[in-house]
Image 1 (cartoon, rainbow over the protein chains, first blue to last red):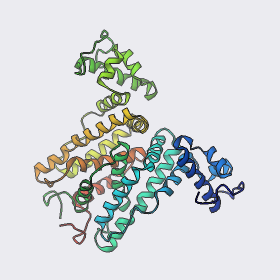
Image 2: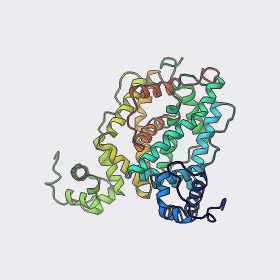
Image 3: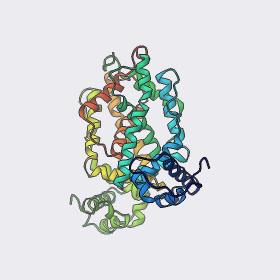
Image 4: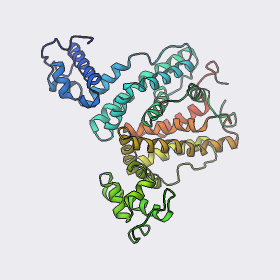
Length: 204
Length: 204
């Protein structure tokens, strides 16, 4: 256990504004349930019991089980996805390898289950959509650094282009093919970064 | 009804080699069930009954419900996804618009359900993986035409690049955002076709 989730007494909500200590206790309890019992053990009820929090509090902060699961999932991902290698090419390769690599762990199982649930549960779909949009914006830091360095054109719709890269990883995860080679990833990044059209096909 | 599925007598399998008439009757029956009753009505049992075919025959040709559903889905898609507009840029834009557009119909619901099922059913995952790999190769005709025209570099890993485009559509479908504007689609195609690196960033 990394914090005091089990020691705290029953918390009361302070409204839609999250209380950081309660939020942390709930997320920690949720992560422990996931680690110990897997996806099948994960429910708002189980999290409430373990965090000594009220279900209404949890639902006020996370409108669906999928939203809470996504927060737990995101915490487990950590912050190593956008390393600054000094060049956009290296940053993009590192991002793809980090995401595909993370999905080879239990993180991939969790994310697959959320995507699956979102196809029949509107609340899960909303949580997934918000998460996807937020992540595409966040990962845009890779291309923003490139623009600042003068490596990337300033006119680019950065979240849209980052969506292309994350989508590739999604399809790989969802079809059980998390095994592109380093050469394939490098080829992909090089192809789109410098374009694959000839001069005749529109390249400058 | 477009064929004689209801008129035929009970068929017998001729082994793993499919009998075209039986195959057609089964696919037609499956499509009718899907159209009339939706996904919840779709089962191998219901298809066998309607096609007057044996369940073992169906399972010999389609190892899972997902495999049969994918075949029905693919038939409904038709053949309008790779029009030859005379230029790769136009072909790619047309492909993305056709796929996203098709997914706004009931075809999108069917495909989402298959992706969801594949996350918990290994047979469905195998069918989806085979389908995804096959479609990325087939859609490669867009870039192959480009290579033949001298528009696209001949050294490109074509199925890998087509995977990038289809993945973008997958993520849009699975997050309920089938609404990119024409401008966004055009921007995406232009960005990767001609590259978004500056000269300093590696572009020639």
